[in-house]
Amino acid sequence: MNKQTLSKINVFFLGVSSRFEEQRDFFQGLDFVFKSGTKKFPGSFNLKDNKGELSFNGEAKVIDFKNTLNQILEYGKIYDSMILKYKERGSIIVIEADDKKVSSKNEQEPEDLKPSSVSKGRNNFIKPSQASRLLKEIGIMSEDGKIKNDMIRKYNQIDHFVEVVIPILDKLKDRESITILDSACGKSYLTFVLNYYIKDVMKKKCYFIGVDYKKDVITSSEERAKRLGYKNMKFIEEDLRSYIPDEPIDMVISLHGCDIATDYAIALAIRAKSESMIVVPCCHKELKDQIKENPINPLIKHGIFKARLSDFLTDSLRALFIESQGYEVTPIEYVSPLDTPKNLMIRAVKTSDFNKTAHDEYIAIKSMFGVKPTMEKYVY
Image (cartoon, rainbow, N blue to C red):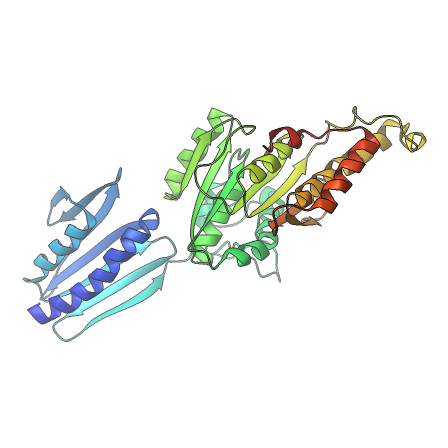
């Protein structure tokens, strides 16, 4: 290719280089093919342990990305044409060049178009045909590309979770990047799903932190992220009662944090000054034995009624406490009770520093029942 063509290619390369620097965590590789007559000469560049490796004509060498592009321009001097594909999560930039024309276009990652057996008539947010790699990795989809029969309910829960999170994501979409912390992350399924949705569907930069006190689940999540190529994630073995993240947090999530694990998540979100939080409580043991004698005691003399009051009181106080810290709170039923009885979700978005009315109401209700929720202990 002549000097004029190579100069035009270099203009496109400047944009690609800038994109690599900004989106390094989402980079998946670079492939190129030179053509001379009828012969083709393929090459590639990939990151291995954060070191760049350029392979061409049977040779491989360690090199950074910017110098790789310069090297490709050098190679181009002796060939007739080139097709280069810059691949990142969710998209592919294709540059085609010869001495007649240099052009660039964007392509979507190839989709697995096998039919889905779920949610007929519903416009799914995590589409099985496009998210097959993710869904297979988290055990929702079989290798033949279909949602497993015993996972259809789980898939629907995951998809609906994304749907109810979208209103908060929309409030954050103008930010350069969205940072989400998963408290008591466990296997981190929802973290991976949100990572996919924000980056691959919304096309937004994002970063995820998973925190848990169990080393084995941290290791498992790290291995899953590596298999998926999700480099924009870190997993930390930490005590949720005292952990404070180093970076600003846009959202804290906690799904089915058992008993006071939900309180730990709420306190962590407030300590971290998170812009929003989404918690789905599970199990309510703490307050049942704290409830003191009061005028409604005859109504809860039977254990089952006292347990139900404890459930209601726990989550109502959580919502009120979060509100007192300056959040706008929206409790919702996020899935059908037929799918799971643990279907309450508390969504909250930071709107002010403090809400005195909600604080006073919270103190009054606590006093009435003689209870003290755990979340208070770890907020400050």
